[in-house]
Length: 205
Image (tube, rainbow, N blue to C red; front, side, top):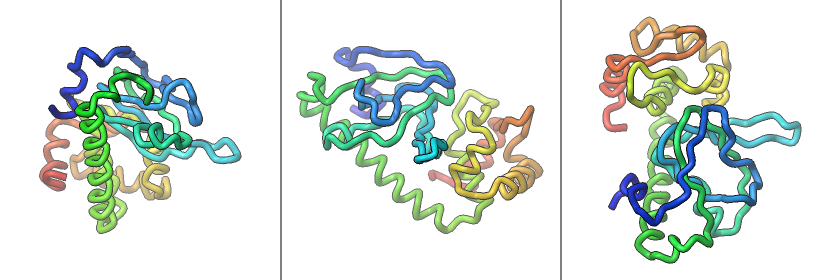
């Protein structure tokens, strides 16, 4: 059983639909803490003491958020907002599902694999130039069907990568000239051919 098969488990109840822009979880929320993302893309962000939003990451389904924090009874410092339409399940550590050792083992194994993937990616990205990091992030975010419109604004992409907006705009212009993307109405659009070209650059990563 892999993580995607989890969503066919009849014991998993409470499937919810969400719309782009909807908040699925607020920081310090006590309503529920474990999110199983079945479809769609979301952003993970927090807020500083001045109330400014700090974009930390994005997640595309299938994904899990909040599992370790919930069982460790650690506060959730980040919130989740939808970048596209999708579906998810909201769980609590007290749900009967977590009494099933096979289910819990699957969840923990999957989350561990995510951490390992993040570490490998971090090491890989440290060797990249700013332009390569932009292309790699766009490649990671892109999902069929095509053409795919990146759900992040350009300003958010710059904040996520920690690069100056002027530098980002220059990188995007260069990547557009090379055929990796198109820009329409301020949005970044990826064709299937462009995605395949990115795959040739980054391989299995």
